[in-house]
Amino acid sequence: MKTWLLILLCALAPMAQAATDTVAWSDLEARYRDVLGHTYRAGGQNPGGFDCSGLQKHLFRSFGYTMPASSSSYANWGQSISRDSIRVGDFLLFAGRGAGSIGHVGLCVGVEDGKILMLHSATHSGVLIENWVGQPYYERRYVGARRKIQFSF
Image (cartoon, rainbow, N blue to C red; front, side, top):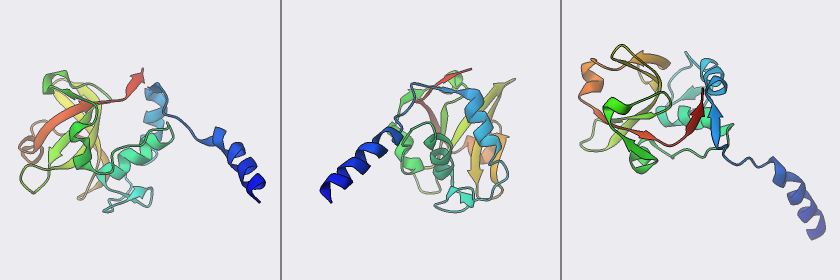
């Protein structure tokens, strides 16, 4: 029995995917376009419904990344980026309703003409892309941005 188990484990080992060094942005874009409009669901990590961190887990799973467990876990993940240095592929962090804690994470999918476009899953509308710059709700809750994953464009 132990021999068969060892053979099975050896056969499955190549299927375990390590994180890729660089993610092709076009591949990620195709992946997130498939889930635009899906509903919000607290704790959701699949097309049946996503919360903000569950959306990131779903998007990056196929590239071999194990994403942080919750939005607050992004606080020390990757490199801190100043607001004026945000670029496509950076993770955007926002405070939750509680004081001092990160309660929301989104992915920057565009920077143009003073706009920063964020892909995220929001309780009010599910998975969408929107400009958060100038929106009082997001402006007062913006905590920072983090860069971790390298993209090829």
